[in-house]
Image (tube, rainbow, N blue to C red; front, side, top):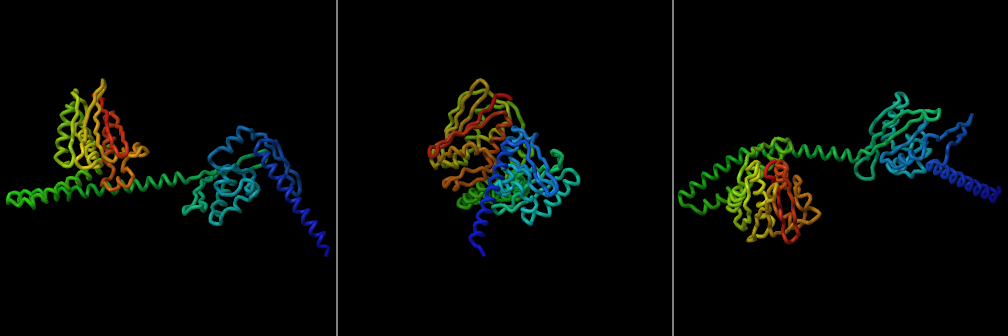
Length: 403
């Protein structure tokens, strides 16, 4: 056997194949760039002419830049065209996608489903269905295949648009989680309200009896229990308010009221509970404002409670006001740990709590500021926060005199 001749033939054949591959790549690139108007495919019995007159430059650019995968396949399931997005979705280099059998190179788990979609498209003219490919991570990659049978230069082909449903699925999952959480909150808050009210009544009765008997130690202990029950009652109230806000059922009773009188009253009531801070009032004279007095008082209480929670014992909490021609601004300033700049825009979101080693030591669900935000929005006002980590925060709301 002439091994040298066989080797030379093999080398020649390899070089020939490499040249064909290179030529194929050049042709594909030329087609994609719009440099080819037509090409001829030789079959066993005849030559078929494929023209690309309709694929003008703007159309090509659009297809190449679209966020969905786009491809065309013939009756043998061979991919005649694919954009880069489809190649990225299936994790195969683009130059390897052209000429592949679409069903053939798909994972076995999706072959049957894809085959059914394609057959339905040839039969009915169109079909749509979801196919989940094995993903790179723990979750599969959900893809929506929208297929239409079209006439292209005398031949019928399938035009396929492939949409990545990952974000949509994640959004739907998050929505379902939030709905279940809302349902739990609604049920839990309603179920807790009655027993907590009963417990509070018994505690107050026992405290009165101990005070009457002169047992001050027991009375003081029950006073602390009563204070904790008040916190729990406030939390339950917040949960119920959130549910009412989400359903548009939070009731407002609006009228004109003395704003300064409300601020002073609220500050005095809060000071009785906050023993480790000093509330300082710096109020300007103002006229009456229109709104729900109790709801605005709730906002002021939330601001002061928040300031006390995140500032050191013994520090001051400054409650000040300013007026202009259209309304009044109330600010509550603390000298506590402050809020990082990148988190300040989120503090009025539902269930948001500032992340950080110091912040995580403070109790709360992140509802007070969210409820306050919704109340002020309902009054056509706006809320702001200014904060420097380590120096404290200033929470403000602007309220129009009328709305």
